[in-house]
Image (cartoon, rainbow, N blue to C red):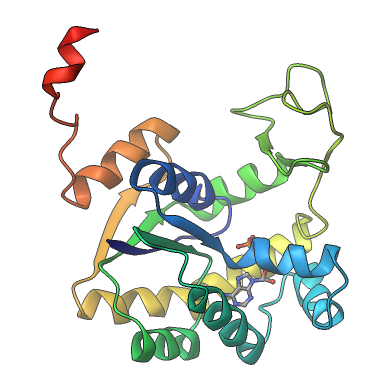
Length: 223
Ligand code: AMP
């Protein structure tokens, strides 16, 4: 059982890295941002409150966040563990979380503000299947069309310059201090998020103490 949190400014690649870790260790990937977007798309009771904050690049209220994270973890569908992405984002959320759950490690994907801005402004999302693209590193074969399902690629409503500045400010002022809290508990591993996706993934595995490359099994030699 592995219980991880992955943190970093938006655009640092934590969503991609969370997915890779989830696949490798059969973890449930819990992205609070995805849960919020699902609520907005499905016009739930909370949708209007969430949408107002998300569109403005502001943090959603801690009461809603606590409710959503608690309900998601209470589903107990995470037999092999979970990786929480986009949470906690401030001191209140971190305190609530640490009071209720044990974790094995917090993965901090570090990138500079300039890299964040450049990556976010080139981020695109398939409107149909939700696949992420990046016009710098992961271009679609046909412009504005998803390689997998052919859906239209769109910019997230909250990926505009003003909202990005706001989220970066919140990250530096509210989320980074949370890293200190976890560091005091010796839970943090930090990796350089400017490397390639595969290099960052391997750096995370090494930092978490998972042997890399994995030891070969007798079966592997049979081809
Ligand atoms: P993300 O997909 O992680 O970039 O999140 C998108 C948006 O959802 C953020 O800009 C916030 O408005 C909101 N959000 C996501 N996670 C949290 C959180 N832990 N606390 C408050 N707001 C959040």
